[in-house]
Length: 113
Image: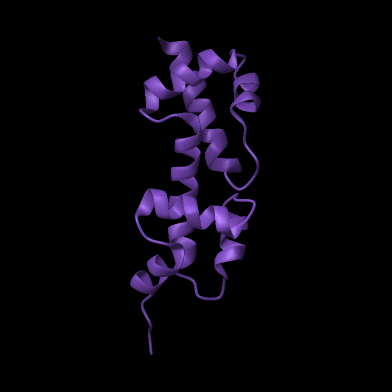
């Protein structure tokens, strides 16, 4: 089904460019000229993830790099990757990674002297 694949590809590129903004399934479905329900089915079929999980995983991956920088607070990193607040970010991070952002930071920051 090439049209669906193209729509999903466009959606993934959009997410890569706008992951730090509010992104709704409906907005992206409109951009690729598909019914949101149909787009959601295509997205899940092509990526193996539902739309929200895909965006959350993308944001969490981006945040992992940022957490290695001690200059940024966890709250500001949450905002940078598109989460409205640090508490929700921490909850989602823990769901996907298994540990909190603070624990992740402690385990992955290398102190260079």
